[in-house]
Each structure stands twice: as structure tokens, then as C-alpha cells.
Length: 71
Image: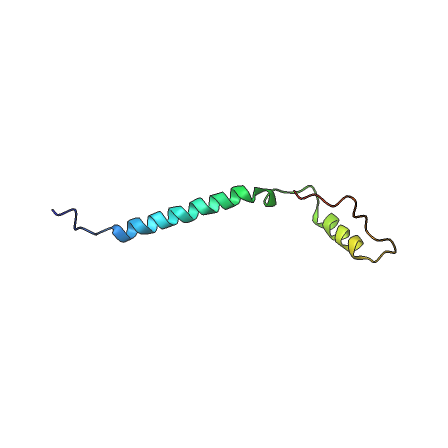
């Protein structure tokens, strides 16, 4: 048996390494962006109400002294 020149299974091993790399990248992305996947305490109805109230025109300009903080 000549194991050095044998290339059977090489393609499968490369596909498995590629798949493993994709999985590692996906896990890293989930860890970095985990705050976007957490459920919030706000419901759909409350979110729609906030959007509706925020889009209505008002005579007073918005208060920019306290900008919203990011999660």
C-alpha cells in the first residue's frame, strides 16, 4: 500500500474542514450579535404604538439632550 500517493477521501476531508470553518464563523457571529436575538420586554402592540406616536408631527422639537442608548 502506498499511503503517500493515495488521495482517496481527500475531497471529503476538505469539505468537512470547510463545513467546520463555516460553523465556527456562525458561532462567533451569534456570540457577537447575541443581544439582537434576546427577547425584549416590549410587545408588538407596544412597538407599533411607539412608532405611531413618534411619527406624528408635533410643535415641539425632540429633546436631543439625552440621546437614546444602544443595547
